[in-house]
Length: 382
Image (cartoon, rainbow, N blue to C red; front, top):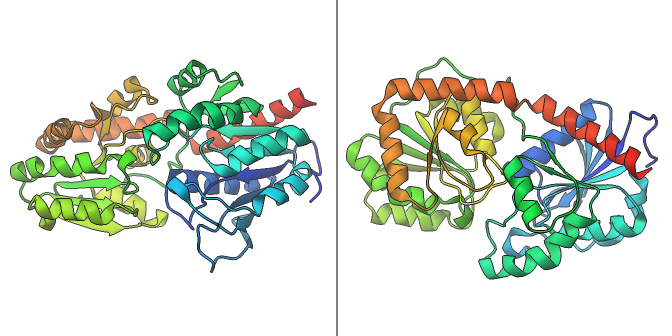
């Protein structure tokens, strides 16, 4: 591939551990939508990713205006895909691109690209999707962050972070690369309020079933909620290795009849799911900022109970939701019951959430600012 055909057209290489719809989740969906929208702006976008162990997926595919190159996964320790063939291809082809955009310093493809882009003198930007892993134990993170993550981030030309707090956390860990704050965006035309009637007392969780998402704390909170609202329905949307463990946890607590495990829900079904729910619970323990699912719920005027994760802006959260301490099942139960008790509060928070995302978290603005930053990096590098 030749480089961009005009000063405004870029050849972009995007690196991501997983891509939607091969995998569900915030980063897979973010990278798919970013690639689609940048292609719509006229740029040539190639996404290099893993096949996630699915040998039925094609090695190369054209979709939504951009090119996908899937590499065969060898192993996946702690949800970190290792596709060895990506290494020689990056080495041989990285100079064909104007800029490389890698998503999350926690993944193999980003770590490798930082090394190769430095040697090949190809501009690299990295999006910080969360400083800490949601799957790795603390002792691994204590080694990985200084020995791998820090040099990876410091080798890049620019880091994108979602909040000022996340930028501060990077600086505290001796990351010297410039950091630009660009909020994660939501397509507010796609996620929008539906006037149809809600399912009464329906509680929603959206996310993968792993420890970092805090689902166990939500499950611990459910008996108290069901005791107050015996007709409450709890819908858990997502996949993951711990789903059966949480299902058993609900059985032991005697609330299995109130809980429905939906599995992986396609993105085109999510607006209806948000709209039919009374509220969303986000008990996560680590994120890059306000979780994407929270913003999607807000866009649908669905109120939220959310944990006070370090990288999120509490002042923003409190404008449109109820914030609770991390790892506190009691606080989750108390605030869910508070919202179920108060129709006017739910309506107020839902309306404030919609106003917030339409004013501050426009997906179009996210894409345009990201792409403008590429040009700024290229001007600096040249």
